[in-house]
Each structure stands twice: as C-alpha cells, then as structure tokens.
Length: 330
Figure 1 (cartoon, rainbow, N blue to C red):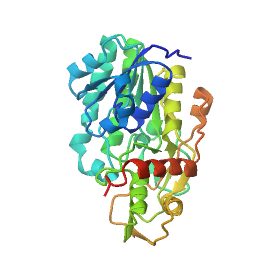
Figure 2: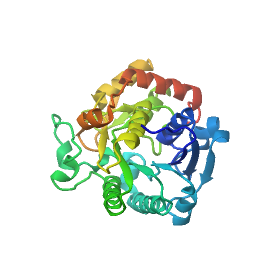
Figure 3: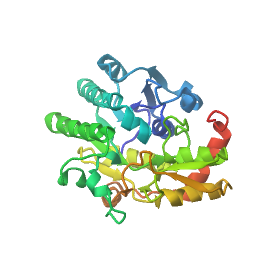
Figure 4: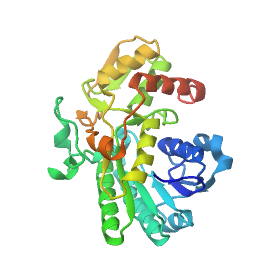
C-alpha cells in the first residue's frame, strides 16, 4: 500500500470527468496535488471546489516542455489526459485523436527524466478487436484478447490507446519504470460532459429525458450492449492499480452493470418519469455490438469489486445534472 499523505502527485487531465474525482480522492488522503489540463474537455467548474487546494497548470501535454514542467518534483503521476469524445467525434476527427500518441510519449519521457517513482496510464476498452465484439452472446473480454487474435481496435482512439499501452510496456522493460495500466469500461457519473456535441450515451440520454425531447431519438437499434462503471468505482480501481500492479500489464476496470442500450434508455426514462416512445436511428454511428469486461484479473490482483449499482449510479448522475447543468445543456 502507498501512503499518499503529503505525497507530491500529478494528475494529468485533472480538470476532466474522472480526473477531478481522482483529485478528490487524493486530497482526501492528504496528498499534495498538481493538476495539468488544457481545458479542451475538462472544466474549471469541475475543480472549483478544490481549486485553492491544488496547484493548477493550464497547458497542452503535446508540448514536451509543458510535460516536463508539470512533472517537476512529482513522486506519482496519474496520466488521464487524452483527446476523446463521442462516437461521432472519434469517427470524424481522426487527426485530433492521434494527438494522443504525442501526449503519451511526452508524459512517459517526463516521468523518466524526472525520476517519478511510479505512473498510471489510463487506457480504454476501445483497444479490443472489433471481431470479438460483434455477437450478442460474445464472451467477456479478457486482457490478453487485445492482441491474442491480432490488433484491430474499433476506432482511431482505440489504436492510440493500444499504442500508449505498448509505449508504457517498452518504458517498463527499458528503464524499469513502475507503470500501471487500466482499461475502464464506460465510466459515467457526475461531471461527465453533457454537451450534445461530445457527450457519451448516458449523459446524452439523461439530457434528452430531462428536457422531454420529442421525438426521442437514440442512435442504433437498441441492441448494442455495454458494461457501465460508476466513476467512484473506477477511481478506486485506479488507485488500487498504482498501489498493486506496476508491471505494465493491463487490467480491466469493468464487468458489472451489463445492459443493452434499449434497457438503459428505458431505465433512464423510468428514473426521470418520462415514458415517451423511442425512435431508433440506425443511420448513425453506434459502435461495436457488445462490449463486456472480464473482471477476474481486477478481482484477483487488485481486490477490486464495484460497489455502485447502475440504478443508484444513474440516480446520482441525474441528481447532479439537475442541480448543476440542466439549463446549460439546452
């Protein structure tokens, strides 16, 4: 176990959705936290409640000097910064997405040069091959599946994250760097983006139901299925990984709350008391057919067991949206 008390910790992307929740946890453990974020997707609003308790650097980690400046005197680095967005954004902005390769290289190099004790790399479930996610009864994805049958991620974003993992493994082998790698599966919760231009499925559905949209349009046919993990469970897995698994061997953070998009839509409508009919738009991007994590390794290596049910997590997320950004999302 790591004693985070007074430890100097960097969170890249710390003004973002998961990053800001991770900063909350580190402050609870009395760490000295530095955040670096270019605010392209993160928000000052996400860090307003702890702004005076952290050192904040607004900067783009695609610039090597920014990465080195941010890493000064740091003992532990949680690397969450990345260019990401909705299914549509990732399909239409490939050049933007591949900026991730520069960001990841610069962070790794800065960690090496500044002798950071250990680093965590936040990868993605998008690294898995398309062919393993086409059938509705597809078995849960095991970590080795990402390369065992040939690399074929479903998006450019997935390719960048897979390459980021390979970079981390190379630095681990070459320099003995302690690096943890996690693959979160569809994190959701408060502070996620509800902007119609780049929101993921849960924020998009919550926004539509709260605003009583008609027609109520959802992309796909509703048969797509995903595992969803509430943000506090993901943060717990991230912290456990950097404590217990710094061998650059990826670990899934997912497996619970597996549900089809049709069932998810109906559940959110129920929780928001909006029972309108659903129009399924099959012309829009809908991602892979099914994506479910095998969490055996996370349970065995990390002792990680998600605590928040999907219904409880959705209630918390809906309540946060109603309190913080209902008007802003119109």
